[in-house]
Amino acid sequence: MMDDSVAKAREAIRDARSIAVLTGAGISAESGIPTFRDAMTGLWARFRPEDLATPEAFQRDPRTVWDWYAARRAQAADALPNAGHRALAALEEACAARGAEFILVTQNVDGLHHASGSRNVVELHGSIRRVKCFDNGHPASSWDPDGAPPRCLACGAMLRPDVVWFGEVLPGGALDAALRAAAKCDVLLSVGTSGLVEPAASLAFAALEAGAAVIEVNPAATPLTPHVTLALRGAAGEILPRLVV
Ligand code: OAD
Image: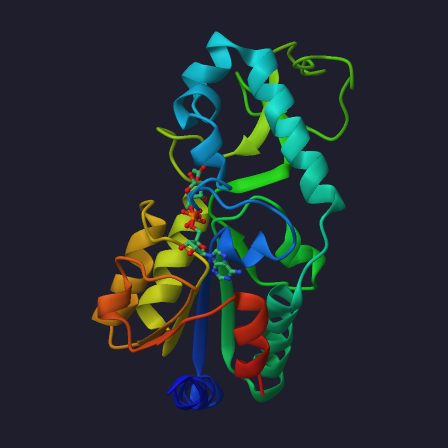
């Protein structure tokens, strides 16, 4: 049953002229980075997003929010890409070698796709490895480590992580690139995402509407599962290496 589905998925990927991949927190779980919604271990099971991941929360309590993201930034910096990340980098290489298009759209802010050698990566929710100022978006390459939060050298405003908070719009270019890729791919791989957060959650449906095959890799079912072409039940680090030929 599973081997059969994996064989079908491998074939669809091998024959595709254009592949889009959407990843979520699940692909980084095997690198020791907690997901958001897994019971008990997920970040949102332990913290209230409205207290930590909104512009209002930052204005209310900038120190707590800055420190929380500083801890997550250190965790991401210490984490290593796993076999799932590496398989996607290898798939990009294989696509380049045979002239097929490949794009990797991630909701993750941990930077592990870049760290594993992926190149054509769209960070829909920004990156925890980047910092900018709250008032004007001035990027900051260095900051006072004791500042909580530190201040922008250009305008003196508070610095914040360059990630998308709830209620904020996604980086324009990123969303357009993701929507374009979903509309023209032959195969969309949805890996390690619960499919609960928009607009990322709509990408797989846009691909289905455009006639693409959608392959889901996740140990658990999601709202997308009843609609996919193939559902591969398991961990990304185990399944993705079997899909790359
Ligand atoms: P979630 O935590 O909502 O979902 C993680 C998914 O990964 C679940 O469906 C798990 O079953 C699955 N999973 C767990 N371990 C896995 C493994 N080893 N391999 C494959 N899948 C695994 O995370 P996201 O869907 O990424 O946004 O959440 C979307 C957005 O919600 C995040 O980007 C963040 C969050 O709030 C913002 O903060 C804007």
